[in-house]
Amino acid sequence: MKENEAGKDQHTSILLISSFYGLFLATLEIWGISGHSALVTGGILGVAISFASKDVFEKFLNRIWLRFLEPYKLGDYIVVKFEKLDGKVMDIRLTSITIIDKKTGVHVVVPYTSLSQKIISNVSRATRVVVEEKFTIPFKDLDKFDSIINSSNQMLTSNFSAEDYCKLSGACESRIELIVFCRVIKMDNDMGEVYIRTIRQSDLINIARIILSSGATIGKKDNKNKNEND
Image (cartoon, rainbow, N blue to C red):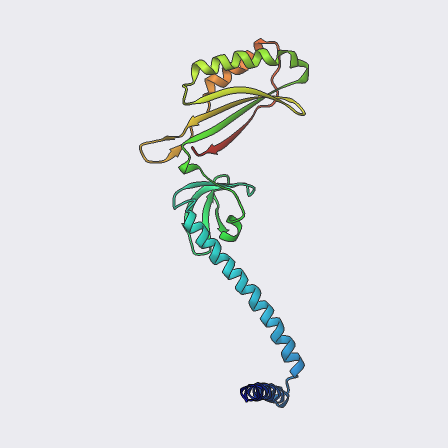
């Protein structure tokens, strides 16, 4: 008996839905609107709304993730790797942050959806900073390579403290590179601003003198700065 009643209720529901659907299409036809066109338009709108909802939801999740981790705050100096963007955080909004680009001085708005897929380095929170300076010498001076490195490292060891690790190493690719690698302590001035203590010019000049006194010649010098967290 109960099964018959359930079957009747289900049948009644189907009839009601079909009736409302038919009435809806008939109303559209009276207004001069094709039912088929309305269904197609509704489907397109449904897809568009679903994509928009997905984007909003993704931004919301990224915001929660960044808020929970707190990789930066207002005034922090950050580096966004693979975006060639670094500068001070000036504004934090619901879906984006604003950074003053160090190179151009332009305010750059970066959405959280972009930041969530990038590596962010917070220089303001780093206790030490890696500094690199590079000298290149031609392959014809390869026999002087070891002598230059040994003499330069002796000089650097005597000039830098144990906390400021500094060393000269070499790399051979398309040219011979002498890399001065220093892991130095980040300093703060009286105004609370962070600055990076780079390799002293006197040490670079001494390395250049060691290279020249060995009989080698110096090619183009390059430099590179990185950041580390202890």
